[in-house]
Amino acid sequence: MKNGLYAFLFIVVAGAAGHIGMPWWCMALVGAVAALLFPQRPALSFSTAFSAGTLLWYASAFVLNTRNAGLLSAQTGSLFLGLKGFHLLLLTGLLGGTITGLGALTGALLRRLFAKRPPRRYRGQRQTFRV
Image (spheres, rainbow, N blue to C red):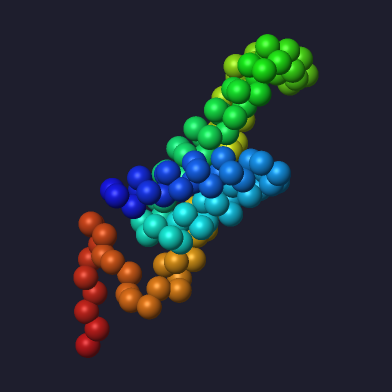
């Protein structure tokens, strides 16, 4: 629980700093670093990074959209089957969340791959005994 909050805050702060002069795919690297620094199960790591990335990208797109009074998103939306500007903002947030979540999933699986201790048993798994 605590690692999830720390990972969420790390992704939001580092991602906001990365928006200044970094390419769009730096969010995948931020998600991977967050998953490596704050250990969680892979699915929980994905969901935490997905929500942080969605929030960050949506907020960034919303700020840019309000600066130009929604004109650019309305014109771009008309090119894509007549979508409204709000729909493009939601689509931008979901795309950013997916990129960040997949980066965090990669980081969590890398952490699990190179861990020195055996993986934890999760609820529902059976214990196997070797003779």
